[in-house]
Amino acid sequence: MVLFTHTFPNGIRLIHFAVNSPVGHCGLLINTGSRDEAAHEHGMAHFIEHVIFKGTKKRKTFHILSRIDDVGGELNAYTTKEETCIYASFLKQDFNRALELLHDITFNSTFPARELEKEKEVIIDEINSYKDNPSDLILDDFEELVFKDDPMGRNILGTPEMLERFGRADIETFMANNYHTDQMVICSVGQIEPYRIKGIVEKYFGGVLENRRAGVRPAIVPYQARREEKMMDTFQSHIVVGNVAYDLDSPQRLGLLLLNNILGGPGMNSRLNMALREKNGIAYNIESIYTPYSGSGVFSIYFGTDEENLDRSLKIVHRELKQLRDKELGKLQLHNAMRQLKGQITIANENRENLMLSIGKSYMLYNRVDTLEEIYTKIDAITSGDLLQIANEIFDPVMLSYLIYRQS
Image (cartoon, rainbow, N blue to C red; front, side, top):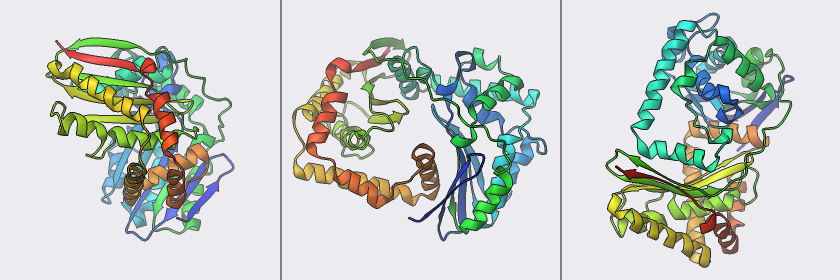
């Protein structure tokens, strides 16, 4: 993979991967998310992601949405706890159109009061839809339990009460304080020469006023294991069990990713899926999730089951965790696990929109992007002893937290 990179004087960075394809992808990644909100700004990062599409100095909402749609492309955005992204897919001849639009909505939005009020109702509906989906809600609530009393624990969407307070001045203040140019990356994948993509980005983003991040994110509140149960009007009981985990800079991060894949990753042959669903038929959906953040991370196991099977399911989960803590993987088991993870990473890179976002995030966080061969080498360096050590640290029963939604 030959990547073109460039840093502009204002701190905004560009990373581009040239491919022979009629379709192009580009995005603006900003290293700012919900954890960067003050208490009175809860939900602001996500709110901005919505309202930047609602009018600029030269476009109304319809014109923004039609600018890419009219040429058969797609415009989208997302917010996480640590990043905001606006991105587009389009035909290769429309790179200029897409990048100009990304600049316009990010730096020229006017946030009309009427549009803000309408979008608040849309987000309130989004919040309510989460409440109707306990399998989604419980994962947010679990992070609130794990990161108790820390901004990292607050859900991304905010609350209806908090949203109602937001106005244009609040949005502009948050953006001025958090949309730092040295924390922005323009990422692109498509059939366009590096000098051309550099010229287009320079045309639209080179004149953005420099606004560099002055400090670092505050340290996360120390973790304590907790257990909480709630009565919920659901057809199943839902449970999440987990622990804090390695952060984005940890050398153990890839080892935990491999271990997570073995335990409850996307493969149907994961240990938890085989134990709970295939062998015992007591859970339809079970997964383990590892999410690394700056300064911390979260490992969790989620499943839903009938109330009568809850205790039995938990015993099976603990049995699988104990096995990983007590016994090293054999050579064949380790080889197969590595091969599976390599395959998943390689296949994911074939989706060029995913690839665009992946290289952008890596460049934003590390100022570099590992090739597939470098990733394979790092995976091959993981030993069974490494995984045993990680399992005993992250799956330590004393350190596990529990959140249970019981059928009312």
